Every structure is written in structure tokens, then in C-alpha cells.
Image (tube, rainbow, N blue to C red; front, side, top):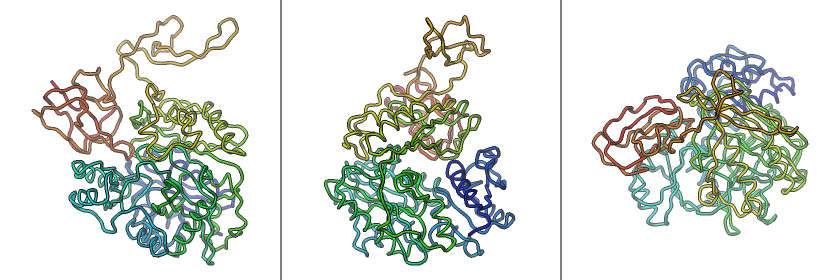
Length: 579
């Protein structure tokens, strides 16, 4: 077994790996950016080293800095977590060339499966087929138009060297192709460091089902059941379950066997996930993620297998301690991702900021994985996952009830979160009765009036929003009021706040278009003198590795543009003025 493991990541997954190492008696090494100097993962690790920089490119994607720390610390293994370098074959090869173990698959398998085009070809060679798509990179919008006209619309443009919905854009017609390609490439480059893209037919109402596999260096490969990850927004998951419910057991077994075939076909070693789209009784290969998944805890809860421990043991050369016949699925587990996003009635706007209060739920069958505590900051430069609520029940109905109970106990203040949207999903009949699909949240779920609770800055009269409790005739009530910032709340009258439109900033229709969150301007779509319509995109803002279109709050003429590409802006900053 290893003596010291460096975790080339941050946040929740770094904490998860550090804890697994400690349980096995392995020393852990954390790395951190300037913004993460006091982060939970740096405090928990046995050693922590500075990477410098703030953005991901300056810190967690700085190969030279990480390699220097590997050498300085004497680490004999590196765990990449997920995101960042977890699916980067060059990084894995550089690590192993230095005689240090990479806790994941070999670089050759990452290359085959990390390139989504070669991954499709590899799957087809073992008889596993995907949705209609191309096996070459696309470089011209005309390719998208021709493909859509041939196989039908919509078309999905995807990052060839990524996953998790990052860099994915759905194109509904030929007119949208050029803009979608540009946006997909920008997101892919920002998150994965490469901007190559490909395309495939986009199924309109599938369920997203994935299979967890583990393989060792001794020729053994098994699958640990299935997960359903259909509750998504922006092609990124909100709620995941294990096992995938409501699908015939024979079909699930077929998926499992197909996943093993794909893994063996590329000589895969360590933990990985093969993803499928399921629709009308058939399933299609989607991709293989050559890393630990964010949603791995639900598999752990229904199988009793510690996947991170297993990763470490396999990377150290140990043989799998069980075979396929030993895998037993017990009960049902649900994971709820808590992201720093305001549901904003379906807009899901990133919400960076400082967590002022954090109370995690507890109780039977309840687990909460996080990389943050009260006082920590959620930065615009990194992924916005605050934590993961995972529950287990002996059946799906009990798991849903436990998830709602635990979610109700969760308290996060200072930033808006997806919690109210998650609750709306759990309570909806479509979700309870398995009538949802990957587009259900965006196309069917009614989030009208659902917004995330967020700490409010003082208004023009110095009043801030405060939540407290009062007793009336001996009964306790929770109340919200606008009070003086000084905290002298007793006699203060609440002040009604004026809410702006989704574009943020000034009042709706004022023409002073402001951004609703901190971020970086990546595109300006208009020029001074242009005539615009209400909701027309004016600028594109990147926050937490996601692009957000900032639209006009009224029709008129653009009289001033206050930002340029590359500018960093704060929540409420006016970026365009319309007369």
C-alpha cells in the first residue's frame, strides 16, 4: 500500500479522498490555490502545499506546480479526484513516468475513452452502440447543419475531451449552430483545457442510466449495479439514485454486461463509469468516464463497497476481493447535489459568496459530503458544488421520504443554493412515479416563484434581511424581517424590497442591464447603436465554469456598453445601457 497520496483537487472530493487515506493509515497531501489557503481540505490533510494563483488555470491545472509538489512532498501516488486532471492522459502519463502511481486508469485507456469519438469506436468494436453521431471532430457550423438535416433535430454538440455536461450545447436548428459551437468550445476549454468538439443526435426524453465498474490489474472486472441520473439542468445532474428504478432487471443486467465489455475492450483498470441513454425499452451507449463520479456515494450505500478505498487498493496492485456473483444491491439510495445556484424560477444562476451559516443534516441512513464549512467562500473560479446529501432506505419510497426530511434540515446561508429546486423535484408526482427524463426539469417542472435564499446586502436605508424566531403565546415561530445593519432590530419596521428582473441590477425595464452574479465577461453580442428586443442576449457571463446569457430588460437602442471581453464584474454591476 502507498505511504503518501497527493490529492490533485479541492473541495468535497479532496476531503473524501483524504478521509479514506486516513482510515487506511496513508498520509495525505493537499494542494491549494490562494483562495483555498484556509479551505477544509487543506486543514484536514497531513500536509498542504501552495500552488499559487486564483483561477483553475493558475492553480489546480498548473501541471508544473503539482509535479514540483509531488517531488517535494515525497508522495508515491496521486489521486486526481474528478474534474481538473482526472481524465487527462498526459497528466497521468507524466505522473507514472516519474515512478509515482496514478490512482485511476492507465493513460492509454484515458486516451481512448477521454476522446469521445474514439470511445464510440471502441464501444462499437465490442458490440455496444450509441445514438447516431459522428466519429470525427467538427470545425464548421455547416457540419452541424448537414448532420441535423440528415438525422433530425435537435443535435447535441459535446466536448470531445470532457463530460458531466460541461461544454455541451443542444442545437435546435441550423441558425443556432455557429453560436452553439463557439459557446461549447469556450466552456470546454475553460473546464478541460481543450476545445475539440463532436456531435450526435439528441434524444428528446431519455433517462440517463450509468453503470459503475471496477477492474484490477489481474484481469477481473465487475459492475456494481446502476444509477439513474435523469434529474438534470443544463445537462448537469441535480439528483442521482441507485439502482435505476422502473427498468426491467434483464435490461439492467444487459447494461451491466455491456459496461464490462466496454471496460475490458480498452484494458481498463480502476473505477470507472459507463453511461447510457434509455428510452422506450432500448439503451444507447453515451460515454465512459475514466474517473470516480460525483455520484459514487449512492453506489456505496447500496453495495457496501467503499469505492475510494477500492481505488487505492487496486492502484497498489491488489486483486478485487469479490466477483460479480458477490455483488448484492440492498435497498435504494438518493444523492442530492447542493450547488451554489439560485434556482431563479428555472434560470439556475450561479451564486458565489461566503457561507455565513452551515448546518448539515443527520440521522439514520443520512450522509453529507462537503468541502466547506461556515465562513468559507464559494469562488466564481471553481465548480459550485457545496456538498452532497446522500440517503439510504430499504426501498425507493422510504429513500425519497428520508431525502425530503434531511433536505429540510439542511441550513446554508450566505449563498443561494439549489435546495428549493431539489425539494420541488422530490415532491413532484412525475419524479415519484418515474415519469421524468433528462429534459424534465427544464421542460416540465414548474419552478415559478422558487428562488434560493441568499444573504442580502444593505439597501439604501441600511436595512438588511434577517431571520429569527419569536414566541407568541408560548409557540415558536420563524420570521424574516428587514432590520438595521447595526443589529438593533427590536423596533425596526420591515422595508419592502424592489426586485429587479432576471438580468439583475436596476428595476425591470429600466434599461440599466446588470449582471445577477460575479463572473467574467466572455462575449459581447451587441454594439452601441444596435436596436435590441426584450430578452435578447447582450453579453455572455462565465461564472463557476458555466456560461450565462445576460438579456435586455426592455426593447430599445444600446447607448452604452460598460464592459469588454475579459472584464471581471460583480453582482449588480451595470454592463449595458438601453435607451
